[in-house]
Image 1 (tube, helix red, strand yellow):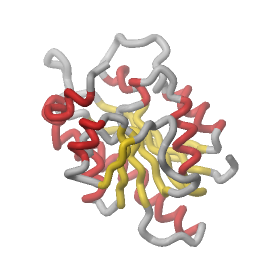
Image 2 (image 1 turned 90 degrees about the vertical axis):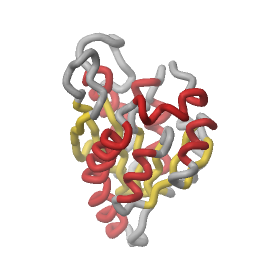
Image 3 (image 1 turned 45 degrees about the horizontal axis):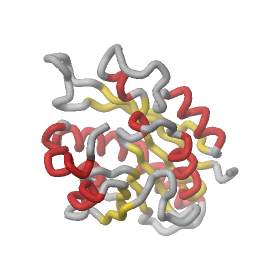
Length: 206
C-alpha cells in the first residue's frame, strides 16, 4: 500500500495525469449527469445537485467533473492528498467507511480506483447508499486489477459480481455501465488498460 501523504505531490504524473483524469471524468459524467437530474426532478429537488467523490485523492478527476458542470465535494483520508485537492475543489478529510455527511444528502457518489485497495469494500458501499438521496447515483470502478491483465488477488474486493450483490443489499439497483482508457498506464509496453465503471441508482428502499 502506498503512503499517500508522501506520494501526493507526484501522484498525478505517475498515474496518467490529465488525459487519464479527463477520460475517467467523462465516463463518470455520462453515467451520473442525466441520472442526477432525473432523480432531482422526480423528488422535487433543486436543479444543481452535489456529487460526493470518496477517496478523491489529488482532486484531479473531481476537478474535471466540476468542469463538466457538476458541483463536487471531495473527501479523502490522506491529509497530503486532501491538501493537493484543496487547490482544485472543495474537500474535507474523512474516512469512506464513516463519512462526515448526513443521510440522504447528496445526489451522486463516486469511488474511482478505491474499492480494489480495501480489505473489505462493503462498509464503503453501505456509506455511499446511506448518503444518497432517493434516485441518486453511485458510480464505482470495478475489476481494476483485471484491467491490467492476469495476476492479482484471487477474490478482489472490487469484483463486479460482489459489488453488485452488496449494493443491492443496500437498495442500490444496477443502472448503467461504462469503460474508459487508463492513458499512460500500460505496463511493460502493453496497451493502456480499459477500466470498467458500474452505476447504481438508489431506490429509496434502504
